[in-house]
Image (cartoon, rainbow, N blue to C red; front, side, top):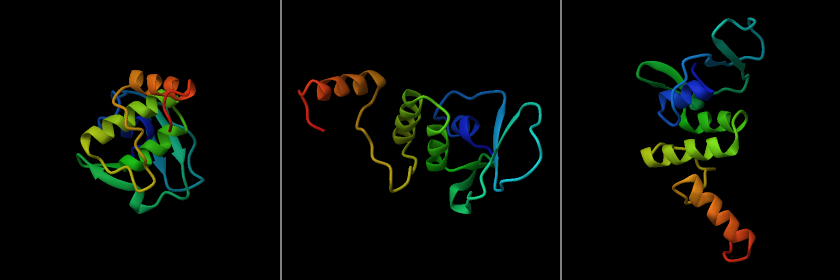
Length: 120
């Protein structure tokens, strides 16, 4: 199924990418890489972490964010999370919003907390 950046594109969390296509298979074995496909293996990929969108097998928004956390800079992950929140997508019970609407707001609040102007 589509995952990582490809799933983020399908969910419209980040701009779509054309290649490579990120695909996750529910195993820890399998074929070698193929041109144009970034293959991820996950023996613990469950049915509750997968769904269908536009007729495509894709990871859920929550799983997509989890995958992005392992592969993208934190600022890009925050961007995807904000977009998911704006779209009302379910990010799972463990998700807690930072309450910001932009990277600039996030960085400003972080600076204020660091300087002791705000508490967490």
